[in-house]
Amino acid sequence: MTDGVPGPDFVAARTDKYFAKTAEIVAAHGDARATYAVFLRADVVVAADRAVEFLRKVYPADARIPLEVTRVAPEGATLTAGLPMLYVTGSLAALSPIETLLLQRIGFPCVAAHNAFSMCVALPNAAFIAMEARHTTGDDMHLACSYGAAVGSRAAQLAGAKGFVGTSTDIAASLFGTPRGLGTMPHSLIGYAKARMLAQGRDPEAESATLEAAKLYAAQFPDEESYTVLNDYDGREVSDALAVCRWFYGPDGPARAGKRLAFRLDTHGGRYLEGLDWEESVRTLLSWTDCKTPGEIARRALAGSELEEVGGMSADEVRDKLLFGTGVTAAAAVHFRKALDAAGFDEAQIVVSSGFDTLKCRVFGNLSVPIDVVGTGSFLPSRLSRTYATADIVRYELPDGSGGWKAFDLVKAGREFLKLA
Image (cartoon, rainbow, N blue to C red):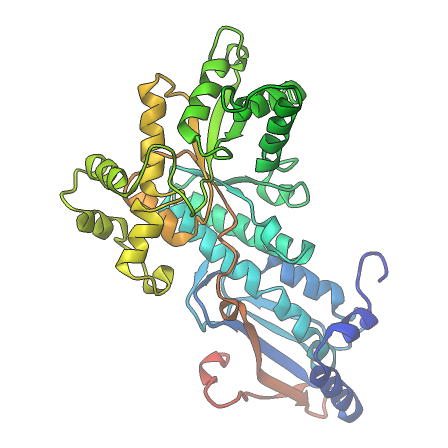
């Protein structure tokens, strides 16, 4: 690699062997000018700038046939499955080995962009924070999907949504226009605070380990403008949140210095949020929505959902997972909001996490669930096959003997729709 530009060895070591062998044959028998159509088999939001930038870097600078890239759909545009997003023209001998590496950089960001766009539009009044890093395979996948989420977010913002305001890592922060990653505390900080209390002979049942963690955080980062407190560690989401509020908004609390407070609901699917069971969850949403039956709530919640979003879940599964069951459901968020408001802490905001994919965002949006921020990595493609980008050559041009080219519009059977007009 020279000056940050990958050399031919970089490409040769990573391409599919049949492309490398094709390049050898073409170089031996006479190069051709080839035009590739690049597309996906899934609906996407186009997020291809980084892939095109990579292509321009690895395409040989000394190639006799110059590289041409024609963008059919602009960055951030929605694109129907199967339609070309760009055409690439250049030396067949040079492009053949690059094809694999180009396609690797197309699918994941475009599908992530589509998912992020759909999520933001479904919850236009909520801000989103990208938290997918821990679910990726490393920097390449993390940055590809964060980039896609940023593109999808910008498209949603054009439609009036708040969209993504940041990410959890420093390495991807610039993609969202922020100088560094966002976030406050994981469960491990509360466990640490609880261990300290026990070591000091204090009783975490009488005192709140969540409050102790919040105090530790505030002391360590006094210059931050807002604190988001994770509150499900001990299964006392409401009780611990109220304890934190009494300190935060109290006479000597951070609110006096203009700080803001939020709670992150992350209750796992193995139990209900404090104060809820199935029956109370149903009552909560019946009251919130003014619906008459649970079935009516479910129909309203799923309005506008596409079959692919539901992912084969039955109506009972949807009700369990998203509405009345365990974990961070619509009922849980409404119940928690009401508890804060009833205690006079209506300034405290609610951040939700735990499986907020397009369907869950749509359900919460359809029911106007009172949340302020969504922390999610669920814009990651849930089905790998949706990310498979494809490039088919649609035109071969061979030297005509007088310095020009003779074009042959050829493509494999069934892909005629990709041909140049």
